[in-house]
Amino acid sequence: MAAVQKSRGISNAQAEGCSALWSHPVFSSFTVMHFHDENDENEIVRNTNDDATVSRLSAIAKGYFADEFVKYFVKRPVERSPIMNRGTYIRQLVLDRLVHQFLELDIPGKEKQIISLGSGFDTRYFMLKKRGLDIGCYYEVDFPETIAKKAAIVHRRKELSQYLTDARAVKGGMELVSKHYCLLGGDLREWDDIAKRLMEHGFKVDAPTLVISECVLIYLDPLDSNRIIDWLTRELTDAMVALYEQIKPDDAFGRMMIHNLQSRHIELRGIHAYPELKDQEQRFLRLGWDHAKALDINMVHDTLLDPRDFSRMAKLEMLDEMEEWRLLSEHYCVAWAYKSCNAKGAFSSITLEKRLPHEGQTLEPQKKTGLSRLHLRV
Image (cartoon, rainbow, N blue to C red; front, side):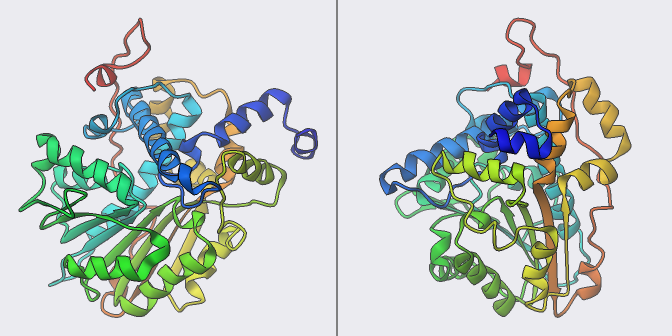
C-alpha cells in the first residue's frame, strides 16, 4: 500500500478511503460472474445486487435523480457517502442518455428491443414506461436466483405490474414474461442457451436492438464476453451496445482496485483484455462495427454534464473528496458502439453531447436519521 501511495501521491487517509470505496459494490457491479467457492455464489450475488440497489436508493433519496420504483427492492435503506451518491447518479445519467436516444431513433416500421445483461434489480424498464416511451420488448437476463426474486416482487407490487401486458409466470414462477417485458434466468457464459431463450420469447434479430451491460461483461472471461459480442455482430442487422466498465488496471490505483476486489473473491476477468479507452473501442471496430466511442467518467463529469447540475448537486450535499473522485472516475468508462444495415444514418446521431433534462428532485431530509422521506416510505 505504501508503494501505491508514493507512486500516485495518495495520502494515508485517501488510500484508506479509496480502498473502502473500491470494495463497495457501487463501484463493482450488479452481478458478479466468478467466485472462488461455488457454494458461496448465490449469497455473494444476492449481497452484491442488494448493496448496489441500496446505493441507488440513497442517491435517489438525496435528490440526485428520480425513481419511484427502486424502493420496492430495498428492505433496509442506508445512506451512502457523497462520492458514492454522485457516482451512482453519473452512471444512471450517462446510460439513460444513451437509452433515450436509441428509443427515439427514427426507424420506420421497426419496434425497438433492449437486452439488459446482468440486470439485477435495475428499474429502467419501469421508468421508461412511466415516461411513455415505446419499447417492443425489454429483456432482462441474470442468474436464476436473482430473476426469481425480482419476478416475485414485480408480480406482487401493483405499482410495478401495472406496466406489464399479458404477464404470466413461467418455469414454476422463477421467471416472468409479458408482451413488452421478460425476466429470464441464465448464465451469460452459456450464451447459446440464452440466445435460444430470447428467441422463444419473441426476440427478433432484424429489429433495432440495444444491449446494456453495466459492469457485467468485464466479470466474464474474454472468451465468453467475446462470444456474446461475436453473436451480436453475426446475427443482428441493427444493433447498439452500451457498456459501463472498469478500466486502467495497470497503474497504481488500478492495481489497488484489483487487489481489493480479489480480497472479496471477485475477479475482473476481462479488464486486462480491454484496459484502456481505445481498447474498449477496438473490441467493436475490429469486428467491423460502424462506430465505437469510449469516455472515462472524468470526461463525462467535467465536459458533458449540464453546468446547472453542478450547482444543483452542491445544494444536495457537499463533495469534499474531489481527488478521490477523480481517481475513481479515471478508472471507469462508458462506451457505446453501433452497427447497422438499415438505419446507419439514424444510429450515427447518438452522442453523449446531447443533454436530457436532468430529473433531480430535492427531498427534505429527516433531522433524526439523516434519511429522506423517500427512505421512510420504503
